[in-house]
Structures are given as structure tokens and as C-alpha cells.
Image (cartoon, rainbow, N blue to C red):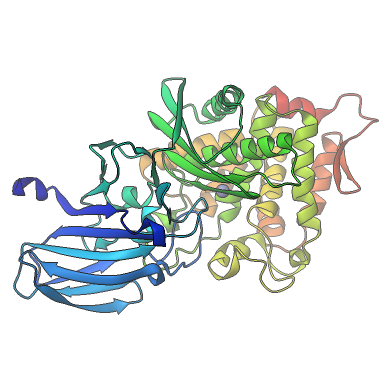
Length: 485
Ligand SMILES: [Zn+2]
């Protein structure tokens, strides 16, 4: 039995005895021959590029030798613990409790109905041993099912390294609903936790349609099983977080929302998160490869990993026929309204706003300071896409750029830079994109001029802040080009 430990540095056990007070009990057995063992908890989670202070949710941290003696522990930083293993015990046990009372798409929650964990919040790694295998055993009732991208047997999840563990949220509950189907050769899983009245047959058909189109762009579905973990909440809510082979989407229908709007909103966020499977979970800025969980991972490229994903999330629904033109335009208009009502456009560029997500990227912040990598990033992606389509007369588009980022960079274990992205835009756009970057990415308040110009070429305009087909245009090029690919 002891031999098997050598393959695995840390074996976690998670217990739910304190679910009624929203605490998860966590214990880790660590095999080490060091006299000092430094454990690190992540300071942030991928998908939300700001520091998160997860350690504030931890209480009752202690370390014990195999014979039950308590070991001396001293914190080294706000989220690292140094254990003095002076007796040189080959195995020590660490235990603590994690407060889990945040039911959204990226955090942790426990009550009598479910155990829901984003491991990046509450699991630690031994510094220097991130690449070893991790095990997580869930001490849960026998009628609980587990939804997770990690393989499991007998309630034990196995991760190849800490990155994979941190990226693998799970829900364990006896009310999980599971639905499975195939897209190409891959299995798609829907997991629903919470009450809902979504038409699963329709959702499956729509998911097949938009997933097929995304696969067609990248020419590859990179995993054998992909899991949608839907947390259905009783009040208005919308939040999604991407992972390598899964996503968590937390949705709630408010009293003031129509059911069709709710369903379309669920489709849009699902398409967005699936697109992230390629764009950011695999196609990654060089500055985030690998992730450094201890501190800020700065990047000026949020307009690519969030902006392009936001652009494609909706566009794919239109191109796959899941959405009508009117449905697409309704969503586009909402985004455009957020763009023009943000005076931050005058004061800060898209690239600099990306860098600063670590400061205030997910809150309104002070007035007129910054723009959004999602909204302005989406509009910049549209300008780039339409410019390539125009210059190549429809032969190429941003699809080709995304395809190449995946195959030239991810498939060669490389991150990309702004120069790499620019080179691909210029390859397919057949012109210099210097001005595009100077104005729309690093400049202030110039995006709208290029957007209007390119829309005019495609027989569209923005009237009363709404995307409109030009009535005088004999043949609406935007509509035709967007749908003809
Ligand atoms: Zn996103």
C-alpha cells in the first residue's frame, strides 16, 4: 500500500459533516522526506484575473505526524504555510476547514443538498511538487453522483498535476441530473444541479449545432468528454467559468425575464464557455504559460481571450442557425449600448484595461477609468474579422486566425504574443494592422470610427445605437458573409 503513495505526493479527503454550517472539512496526507514542507494555496483563479484571498476562508489549519503529534506551522505569506517536519516523518497529515458559501460559477458551496468545489479555492500544493499526481477522495453518501471532468472511481478523483486539479470543479449530490450525447466522436455531458424546466431535447439539438460549428473552425474537438455543469439557481443570476474539459454555468431566472430570453441567455453563455475550451484553456498568452498561482499573471491580451470569445459566443449561434438575425442583433445592441455609455473609452485603452483587470476588472471601479475586455474586445474582434473578410473577398476570416493560433501555438506547447496575433491578422487580412492596433487596441476612443466604416462597407449601419441593415443595399453583405462561412 505504501508504494502507491510514491506516485502521489498529496492525497486529499473531503468530508461534509459540517455542511449545515457551510464548512468543507479537508485533510491531506503528504509524503515527503523534507524537514520543512511549504504548502501554497492559489492566490487567484484562472478565468478571473484578479487576486482573490481564498485563504481568508480557511480555519483550524493544523499539521500532524503519523503518530498524532502536532507539528509546528508558521505562515510565510498570506496563502502559504511552512510545516516544520523536524522528526523527518515520511508521512504527515494536514487538515483545515474551508468556508464554502458562495454559489456562483467559480467558487465553493456546501449545504445538505450538495458539495460544490472549485479546487483552485481550497486545495494546496507542496512547493516544488506541482507536477506530481493528486488524489481527492470524497467522503459522501452512497447515493451521491459526481460531476467532474476528472476521472473517478470509488469517489476518488485523480489529477495528473496541480494545474489539472485546480482546473477541475466538481459537484457531488444525490439530486444531480445527467444527460449525455455525442458530438462527432466526443461525449457531451449535461449535469444539472437545482430545479429547472429547460427543454433538454432542444438544448441538446442546439448544443450539437453550435458545437459542430466551433469544431469546424478548429478542425478538432480536443477532449473525449466535455461536461457542462449547470448550477440552476432560484433567483436571477448569470455567470460562467471555463475549464479545459468542462464549464460551470450558474443561471437563475428572475421574475422580470421571459423564459425565451432566459434560454437564449443560457445558450449564449454556453457557446461562449465552450469556445474558451480552445481560446484560453489551450490557446494561451505566453505570459500565462504556465499559470503562476502565487501572484498576478499580467496580460494585455484580454481582448483576445475574452473579447474574441465574446464575439464568437454569439456569432456562432447566428452562423449555426440556432439564433435568427434578430436574436443576434438584440444581443449585439445590448453590448453596443454598454460600449457607448462608458466614458472610460476616452481615458484608457483596451490593452491597458486588460492589464488592470488585476486591479478592478470585475467591478465598476471609479468613474470613466477603463473599458471592458469583453465589450470593447468583442467590437475590436468584429472589426478585425470583417476587415479580413473584406480584404480577402470572403476567402478568409478571423476563423483562420483562431485555427492557426490553436495549431501553431497550443499544439506546439507555446503561448502566443500580441506580435503573433498581429502577424496572423496580416497574413489573412493582406494589409498592415499597425493602425488597427494603434487605434483600437492601444488607443483611446477610436474604435467606433473603424467599426462604422467597416459596417458601411458591408451594407450596415448603426442607427439609434442599433445594428441595422441598410435598406438601400441591394444585397446585405454582412448578413451574407457572416452566414456563408
Ligand atoms: Zn469568458
